[in-house]
Image (cartoon, one colour):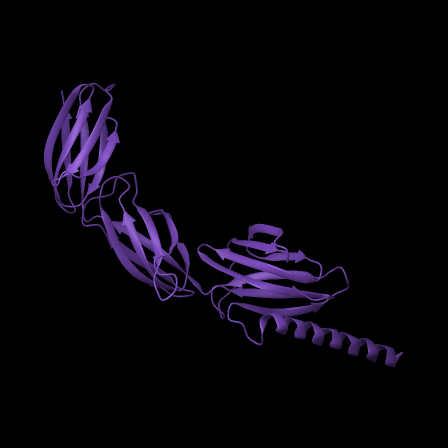
Length: 284
């Protein structure tokens, strides 16, 4: 009886060593972006993966939703879901596991040995970026500026990694340097700033547009169909809108607004000062 128990223990230890050897063949002794954290020897048919993710090696587990994708060796998607962690049974074999947390994406090949359930934690090396956009003393109109985030550095310079409307919350990015462009939704104002994102940290970037607000309004029939064209001092069209009014964010300078109302064309020349709002009213 004692020999049987000893043999069972030795067999279990041997299976654990074989499982660990198989893991090291896939991950190497140390891997910065995906680390096996535990191995469980299981009965045949219970093999699989338990997946978690962290922002940094010494950080806590991410509890917010992560976009997980697991593909078979032939590329077939076996699992795709947004969840904080994954616990899935898989037959022994090779799989490609991808974890996407905002713009921070890690993908690795993981081998599931026979009689093993493998716990793996992905290290995303990512941080957060909050962008505050302003225009001096004047508030932006309802149409918020559009943000574009481009990667900087030796690899991937100029690559668009994130975009969206200002005020949309925290942008999750791999650690590194980025260039942020803030483009007025309506008008010609553009502001650019660079920022460094550190893993496990939340960075805040304040972007101030050197621009002013032009509030165009047609004073006349409320049922009129109005088309607005606004040109800068050089004659370049900077905005074209339809409706009884329009709010444009413009860089400082002189502009000409034209309101086409049926066959009638109304015009006005005005100046924009940074941080100030200007009302331009045209009517018949």
